[in-house]
Length: 517
Image (cartoon, rainbow, N blue to C red; front, side):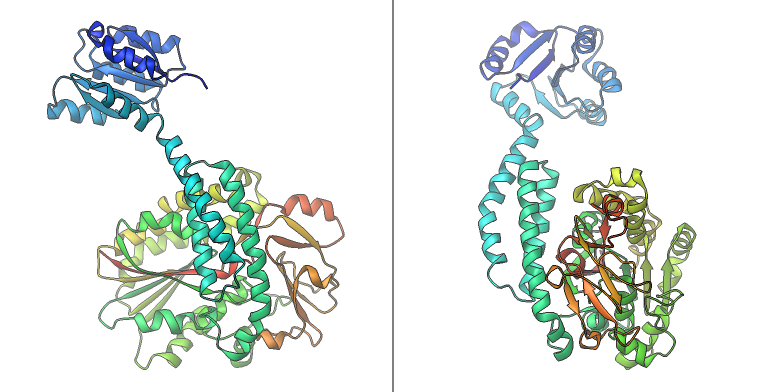
C-alpha cells in the first residue's frame, strides 16, 4: 500500500522535527516547505498529495490565501489549518474556505495522528466497522429468513435488510454488498413461497395483514383530526429503501410519528393496487359495485381515471361525518407547478389526497433511456437518483410550504419495483397483458413450477376478462418473456425495474405518519 503523502507548509518548519519524525515512524511521507508560494508550486508538481497542513500566519502568502489557491484547483483535497490562536474571525474564514480540521500550536503528535485518522482513514474505518457488524448479523438474518416468518415478521426482516443495504452502500463495501444481495435473493425466495401459501387465504378469510384495499380504513381514517388538515401523499412506486433515502430530508421539517407498512395486493401494479387503495375494495368488488368504472387489462382506456370518485365513496361509507376532500394528481411538470402554487389553499380541506407519479415514470424511463440506465445502474444509484429528484422537485417545495402550518401528513405508495434479472418463458394469445411481472389471459402456456398461478381469479378477488382467464405472477427477480425475439427482449429488459409480481420490494409498502414540527 502506498504511503499517505502530507504536504506541510510552515515558516517555522525546523521547529517541527519531532512531529515530522513521529509521522514518518507511523508510515506517513511528509513533504515540507516554508511558505505558501512553495506549497502551491510543490502541490502543482506533485498531484498525488493526500492532505495539506498549512500554517495560518506565514509571511508573504498567508495560510488562508494559500488554502484559497489550492482549493481553486482541488476543491476536495483535505486541508488542515494550523494557527497560534483561536481568533473567531480567522476560524470563521478558515471554515468558510472549506478546511477539514484545524490544530492549535504547539501541535501535539497525537492530535496530528487523530486528525489524519479522521480525514484520511475515516471512510476505511467506517467500512471496516460496518463490514464487521454485518458479518455478525449475517447468520442471525439467515436463521430468521429460514425460521418460518409470519406476516408481521417479514416486513421487519425486510427493513433490516434495507438498513444494511443503506449502510453498506454509503460505506462502499462492495464485497459485503454482494453477500447482502445474495441474502436478499434468499429472502425473496422464501417470501415468495410464503405469499403463495397464504395469499388466497388472506383474501378469502379477511384475516391477513393490512393490504391495499383496507389500508386507508385501518391506518389513515382513524388518525384524521377534525381540527387539523390532513394531507395524504401517495408516491407511485415508492419502495421502502427509497423512503429511507428521502426520510432525512423530510425529517428536517416534519416529525416522523410512525413508520408503518402494509402489503400491496396482487398484481402489484397501479391499475389494481391503487384503485383498491382508494375504493377500499378488491378489484372484482370495484367491478361489481361501480359499473363501467373498472377496465380490464385488455380493454382500451385509462385504468386509473376514477380514483377521486372511489375515494369519495370510500369516505362516505367509512366516516360518519362530512369530509371536505380534494384530490390532486401530478403526472407532469405543469401539474407539479400547479400543486406548488396552490398547496396552501388545499389546507382549507379536511383531507387532501395527492397522487404523485414521478418515481413510476422514472422507472419506466430508465427502461427506455440508456442515459438513465447509466445513472441508475444499481440499487444504490436508483436510491440516489430518487433523492436527487426529490430535493429539486416542486413536491419538496410544496411540502416546505405546508410545513409552516399545523398539518398531519401521511406518505405511502401503491407498490414498489424490483430489478429483474431472470427471464421466464411464457406463451399467450393477442389479448394477454404485456406486463413483465404478471400476465392475465385465456391461453397461457408456461411451466407451473416457475411461477405463481391463480387459475380461479375469483379466489384472489380479481376480475375475469374472459371465462377462461387466469393470472400468473413472477416471483423474486424473474420476468416474463415470449419466445419470439427472446434474446433481444432479454437484453433490453434485464436489470430494469419492474412491478406486478411477488417480491419484498413490490409487496411490502411504506405507510408513514408525520406531523409538522
